[in-house]
Image 1 (tube, rainbow, N blue to C red):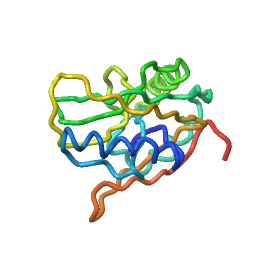
Image 2: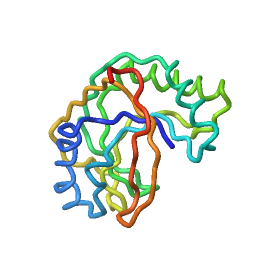
Image 3: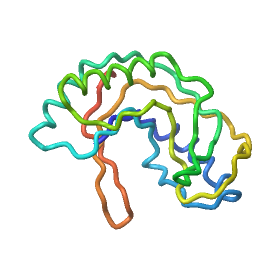
Image 4: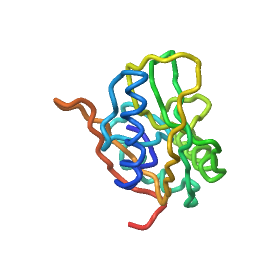
Length: 170
């Protein structure tokens, strides 16, 4: 389970256009377009009897709509991932992450605690150096809400199911 920003199809497709040029120079396996997202808090396994509580407490998170602009691709050598990153992190995103973490702690949910870095994983099993990656066309996401997602496995690999939306209309 994880909380994430879940972009609209056209926003996801725009970011997926980075796959081909990056794969050409870094190799690796492109993430499926339908799985592109920005994780806010990774929870791992959550007991079924705690799901309703998790959904209720997530409604308490501080959320204001914001725009997130993905402007650069970077490489994490320790896990061989190419990811998209924003040049600047909107204050509304920082506040949302802080608020979610506080709520999760208060209600005794376990989650991965480390300094937050907004990113979208684009390629796995990539190879690159410390050199900057080529410029990519900026992609703008409008964050109207955030979601709770369950990760499931099928024959094609990870499949994500959005269980609940928070902070937006509908």
